[in-house]
Length: 465
Image (cartoon, rainbow, N blue to C red):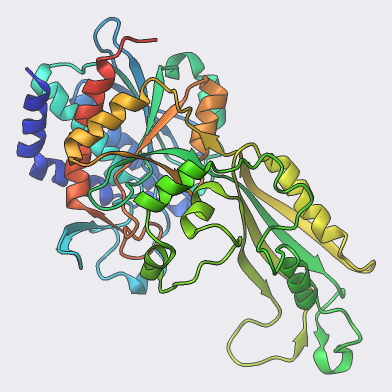
């Protein structure tokens, strides 16, 4: 049998593949909500059953949280060994009233672009992406009776709730999970019909700060002006995080380890990527913010950022209350690039806050994760054949791109297993990931399966390192 036979089987079996995806999407595996712990286990067990059906040695593995799914299929002697990573857990669905269909009752509808869309929570992030790989393996098994290379799958159940158990699991099972390269399907394409491999991901530092001034809430008439207002103080501190003229972050040492973008790279990005206006138009904006002198694309792919993700304090219910609050809180995140140190950034932020506090006020901090940026080496031997395979499927040159988001598993795989990763995904910017009416284009699901068949054949043609 041949690669073409597997591709033909993927085409013929698309309806059945879609039914299996819908069955997985119906499981409300929301990892961050304790009430859905049984659903997370149900999703893991569903995947184990499907993988066993296509010849994998598959099982659930217990963790202090939700179970992992681990599966193995041995390929020909001397062929490379790949580790595929994805996650079966999903985000919460609120606000429920904004969904046009039930979030865990997947539907296939025509979208505004004319494309058929799979609408459900998890359709794009990450169940649809995971199933492109599973269904590709199904077609390969049906065509050849075996896979062209050795495959290990690791499908996590806590990616959307912090993934605190992943790194310990990787370290504890290093010998079993070690492979030649990791394949991570949790990213997207450059644009519709334009495949890509993400080689740059930003790291992240998350911080929550609570400032306390008075020892209780106060009457704003009796104490206004005289007593410190923690909301005003917090806003002043947060506004100092950026230079108003340049847009640069003002934390001490923040730009240490930030690489300079080569001019030829910037020129290529301007050629293949959207303009500022095109990139911002879908979200109702047109003018880039942030650092002066960088395009919106450059800022999200290769520059560090500082964002205020939430702020609260005082009376927030309906009506009005003339209160001078005791406390105010903000959630702040930093996206990191190059060799920026997350521990150093966290320390710099806390110092920034503490040095601006009056002597009679206090600040408490809560850390919410930290990871370094990751970069796939340009000379990684598996990169060229994977790019060529994607180009053959999509009939469009496959781009090497960056991503403004953070996928900690990339750095954790490198740390625990000493492996580089290829980030190959088929999501689109308009997939409404984490939002109501999340969707995944049917063509992305279909051609995602076909892409993995081509990629696995292309990687199999290499001799294992």
